Amino acid sequence: MPKPSLRDSILDAGLKAMFRTGYHGTSVRDITSAAGAPQGSFTNHFRSKEAFASEVLDRYFTHTRTLVAQALEDTSLSSRMRLRRYLDIITRRLEAEGFGRGCLIGDLSLEASASSELLRTRLAEIFQEWRVPFAACIAEAQTAGEIAADFAPEELAEFLLASWQGAMLRMKVERTAAPLERFKQIVFQTVFKEPS
Amino acid sequence: MPKPSLRDSILDAGLKAMFRTGYHGTSVRDITSAAGAPQGSFTNHFRSKEAFASEVLDRYFTHTRTLVAQALEDTSLSSRMRLRRYLDIITRRLEAEGFGRGCLIGDLSLEASASSELLRTRLAEIFQEWRVPFAACIAEAQTAGEIAADFAPEELAEFLLASWQGAMLRMKVERTAAPLERFKQIVFQTVFKEPS
Image (cartoon, rainbow over all chains, first blue to last red; front, top):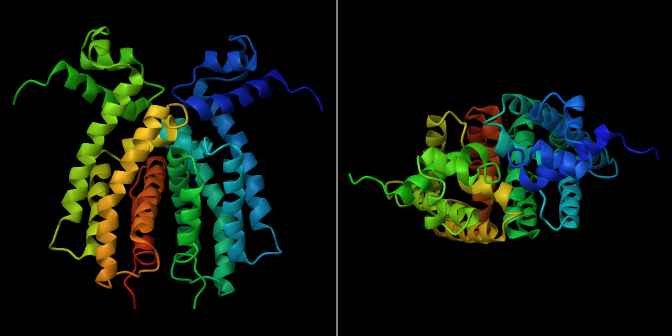
């Protein structure tokens, strides 16, 4: 495996640091120091901390997309169960991190969207793209009669991803899977229940 | 009206600053400077930034409790509609702030619960207390047959408050009421729908 570039090391260190102390609480010095890079090297690679955070977000979302595909393209499952599978995959990953980390996209949505228009705009684009495969999967489930068709697929996709952020927020306080499991149990017996 | 004490001024300034730049991004210097107080005065009043943030949280939650009471004790409404009323009251307040601020309890849950055990513990207590009047209202609605009794009132109360945090998170990115309205519309036609 090739040695990661200094640029990649700085991006990796930034992801870890922002998970721990957020966007505002992470300085360029924190990031370069964690990456073992001279502080001056930051500006060789990134225009600003804001532009840097936007790139960290993009890399994080690229990874998220592979998890989305892993669940929603699993043709061994019904469309409805693929939605559930996504939440189960995320649950397992959160558990592996001791429930101490949630989702960077959610973290920066709460913390940085009021103060950085650049990050807010990028986050809005990410959420818009994120919901597309979910809306498609929900539309398939509706067509197959696996869930009710009372709401547009896009609305249900937005609802699912937003409410799941709330469940992860509660998980970070409880440090257990309970808020995640509660969410899945209630949502798949109500909003996404099988029509009787 | 009596002049607020320096202690109160520092707490008020801390609330505003943490709404803007979070827990990690707000320094003691930022807070005292915004309060027009000498930096040294902070330690006369607070043991640490952590203890200070915990007190800001308590004051914020005291205010939240009055909004909860305003909605859930409104005997002119059915129990089910009181739940809805709470979300409508919060929606109006978020709108008055241009959708740029969400809920400090949610903000600190995401941002500080991984790094501060003191704040995490206090947040857990707050959520536990917060859900009590909601669970009571949901139990009443179930007894009155206004909503289904498929889940325990405590579970539904936790679900409602957690998922609503997710809706506010999305609101901060969109800067519109759409995520809040979508949440209310879907939840009150599914999880909290009137039995047919």
